[in-house]
Amino acid sequence: MLFAPAGMSLAEGNLNDASKFLGQAGQKAIGDSTKRPLSDVIGMGISTALSLVGMIFMVLMIYGGYLWMTAKGEEEQVKKAQKIVIESVIGLVIVLSAYAITLLVTTRLGQV
Image 1: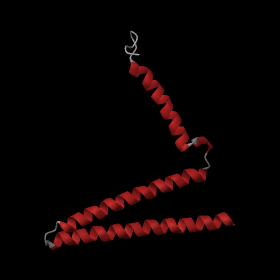
Image 2: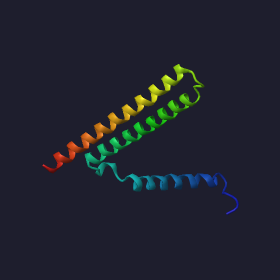
Image 3: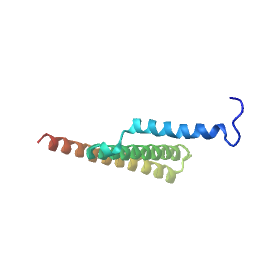
Image 4: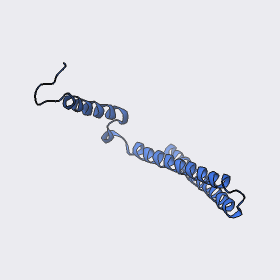
């Protein structure tokens, strides 16, 4: 079809179809959220939060490393960079420890 009928553009029909297919693909990808158990929803939330913490850790490590590498011998900037790196590692250890403890407790309580 070379020309669209008067008053109708080709994109109009295609966008409606694309919206429908996008909704179907999303439904298949994530499933029906009303049929999910609460534990799966909480698990997805925890997974998302841990991913966010990992990205923040990575950004802080890159920033701290950048400060350290560009310090050019300035003691104050080197100390600031070291502080950022050390505190971000401590924060990551705390978050992962809390996750490990939570996982241990929930699996032990789930077996009882």
